[in-house]
Each structure stands twice: as C-alpha cells, then as structure tokens.
Length: 377
Ligand code: SF4
Ligand code: SF4
Image (cartoon, rainbow, N blue to C red):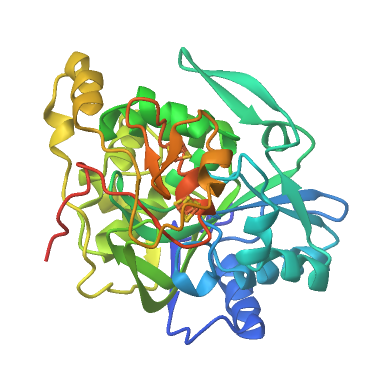
C-alpha cells in the first residue's frame, strides 16, 4: 500500500474585502484562514496558555492605524477560548516606562479584556531575563520565555521611517521591555544593524502563528502619528513571519529582499526564498508609499555611531506646548527642561525613548529626524 500523499498547505493566506472590524465576520474568516493554513498550532489544546503579542506602539485610538486593532485580538482570543485555551494579550510600548495602563485604555484593550475575559499581561512589571542570541545579549520579558504554550504574533502592517516596513518580524522588538528598545536603537545606528537585533528577537520569540492586521494599514511616514492610515481591508496569516513579511512587501510593491529584516532572516536560512512562497489569496496595496532605503546603510559600520550622533535630532515641542512640565517629569533621563513656558529637549541626553511624544496631553511633541526620508511614489 502506498503512503498517503502529503497534504501541502500554503505558506501565506490572504483575505481581503473587510469593510471594518466586525467581530463576527473576522472570527468566521480567521477560522477559515487558519484551516486553510493547516489549523491552529498543535499546542493550542484545552488548558493551554496562549499569548497574543500585539503591536501597541502608541496610546492612540485603533482607528488611527498605529496599533493592532483590539477586535483582531478579541476574534483570535475568542476562537482559542472556545478551544479551551487561556488567552492573554501582551506588549511593551516604547513610551510605557511610566505605566502601560494608558495604552491598554486608549488602544481599546481594556474594554475588550473586560468584555471577553481575555487577560492583559504587563511586560513592564512581569520582569525580564538576559538571553544570548548568536553572541548578542538581550533583556526579554519573562512572559515570552516562561509559562506559555503558544505564542501568536498579531502584528500591524505599516510603513516605518527607519525600517521601511513593520509587520511580523519588527513586532518581535516589543518583547524587550522598557527602555531596552530605545537603547537597542541607540546602539544600532544603521537600519541594517537594527535588522540584526530584530531578527535575533524574532528567533527568541518563537511565534507559532502570525496574523497581520491590514484592515486599516498605514503608509507614508509611519509607524505613528506622521503616517497615513489606509482602509485596505486585508488580513494575512502564516506560520512563518519571514514568509508573511515577504509576501506582504511584494503585495505593497517592495521587492522582499530590499527589506533589511527579510534579507537578514534569509541570510540565516529562515523562511523561504520569495519565489518559493505559496500564497492562497492575493491583494495589491495600491499606491502604497514606502520610505526609501536609508543612506545610513552605506556608511561603514565604525562610522555609523558617529554619523548618527552628529545628525540625530531630539524631539521638540511646538507652539501647542503649554509648559505644563508633564514631559519633563516623565523623561527617564532628565533630558527636558521648561524654559519660557516651553519644553526644551536636550539632544545630547535624549535616548529617543519617545515618552515625551507619547505622554504630552497637548500633542505638542514632534519627532523630526534627519533619517525621516522621502516616501516613494
Ligand atoms: S507635556 Fe507637552 S504641553 Fe506639557 S510641557 Fe511637555 S511638551 Fe509642553
Ligand atoms: S526627551 Fe528624549 S529621552 Fe526624554 S522623554 Fe523625550 S524622547 Fe525620551
């Protein structure tokens, strides 16, 4: 008797046409997508603990297209709860060193959690541990390393002024709690250096499944308030984050290996060559404006830190600043003083943690970096 033929599942499943974040619709389509990709991760059995790692970059409404929409977490979480799993949502936003609660509330997760019983995990307060990856050392949130059976990456598909695109791989950066992320940015002056850290952290995170929220995506000067939200109506799913990023880059018009993170991952043998990726469903992100490649990648490694130090521009307050001093009290390195009723950020001290940008009640802090490049098209 011959062996049964091996069933082949697509590497990436794409569904489009979503008109918003209707939970019932998303749950039905997501279940079909999961089935199409070969089912839920094997360890997602009754009693399993599942973490949904969202992108909660900024404490802004989900309609701004900056963060993973809470209805995606609700839909995935409820499908897994119906299988008997315990489900938790976690992330470490860059500016949340003074508390993540404001992020839970503004991003819609607090209300979603109360309504669905899906738990919230605070990466800032749950401790961290040093992890070695290929000779490099990282501080990683304990919930990522211990006590979980399944990790699901619920990333947001957006442009990024520094890394060009942020999706599955870049979302791994949030497993480093607190100011560690800002320090990594500081120590990796060129985007191609940061890509090495991002792929290291992607390997540490060991996600079992990746789901990308591009129902509201973002192009232009992402990944935060300078970007342009777009109603693309797309969800994409894969068991492999490198394949997912490559497929979505291609759909947005960027050759996948032009992205530093995808190229770094492929150098390590992760994912698949773009031409070998099998996709079920397709979407074209029309006129998706992606920041150009940074010239910093052409600077020799030993010059990178010097060039960045010389050209880096600290955040600055604009005319909306009332001089309330909230940012100065929140800055972790005391880099802000109030002069003539206006916040002044000291470039030499600033570590670009973005706390002032996130916390200012007047939206008066602008991040204008030399590295913000023109977008193409
Ligand atoms: S928190 Fe905002 S308004 Fe208050 S001083 Fe800082 S920049 Fe100005
Ligand atoms: S001035 Fe710099 S270090 Fe201080 S809060 Fe703002 S971004 Fe962070």
